[in-house]
Image (cartoon, rainbow, N blue to C red):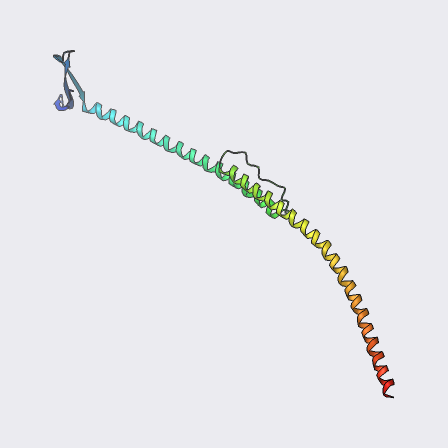
Length: 178
């Protein structure tokens, strides 16, 4: 492969770059030459324009990246803020565990809402079980209360009978001694 090289030449008070390239036919024989000549001022002007264009493209890309990052961050924080507000309403409300998080996105927030709702569902079931057991315990404690009242009454009767027997025994003992 042929490599072109550029050389510098000065004429008419200006600096120019030039390159000479051979024109080859299909059998790789030289059929002629091409001379490329360009003024250095024109090349530097083109370079400056290209540099400005690339800087502009870079600035636009940077601004677009910033806007996209801001939109993504805003979308994420809005979703998190909604979840936090829902959790706050559940926590500060009347303890209504029938509330569920509603998230209509297809990201981690949806998964967070799903698992939180699953947790609240299990917690609701557990609270209902505790409520049922406490109602059973309340009924049983009432029965124990009735039984203890009966035992207290029986104990009072037994105590009265014991005092009566003791009094009769003392009286009998006093009669026997006299």
